[in-house]
Length: 310
Image 1 (tube, rainbow, N blue to C red):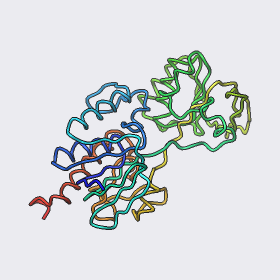
Image 2 (cartoon, one colour; image 1 turned 90 degrees about the vertical axis):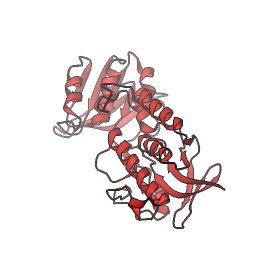
Image 3 (cartoon, rainbow, N blue to C red; image 1 turned 60 degrees about the vertical axis):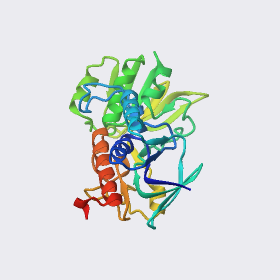
Image 4 (spheres, rainbow, N blue to C red; image 1 turned 180 degrees about the horizontal axis):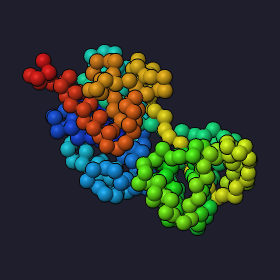
């Protein structure tokens, strides 16, 4: 069994920031991620609200974070998913699909996964016209008709990105005002090939081998109509990857987010959480980085017991 000072679960913005501060504090630090390091930041077509970057691609920003993290001496193991946790003892045990590790402290930065709308056809056509990542699949829809579902920042950013690729973009939102930042909304309204369908809900996705149409419902007029599209991009938020933490005794709220205090501590001593998996109300790259930093410094204090922590 490999022994570490600090194990971080998740290599997104929160986990990478925690790794940088953990290693710089002198902790032997391991980051585990079931996918490629970078987290959901990689999926963002562009990031315009991260200090120091007026505009930067999500993949580029994530790549810079990963490089910085590795340069501090952190070991990052990709495609190694965590399968079980035993957090009650003095030594925290982390089981993966490859090995078993022990650590003095653990930071859970497992992030979130894309929520589904839950309509007929969504699951059946996933990968055949239904997508949850604009930057991943957008290039497949050049000069085609696409529909974006959602009303937050991610939906508007995705629609903006697709507007430069697709022939026409329609964005449906069940309300009559976006939740997205005003600057993003103004940019979207300036796009000539984008149409906003207010008070509209996606009811069904249809097609043959690939998506070719959707059924929409206007919740104000109660009208139902059919719309021909080649692709559907679902951007209705995310849900936390907290199941393993819950099974290990970490307390979560009614929505599944890990409960933390202002120092990122959970209800289990030596176990911290940071980023989108927590019940912090703001889900942004910047807040994830701040939480990761706080968690790492608290873990350092717990492990090394410096004079100011005694």
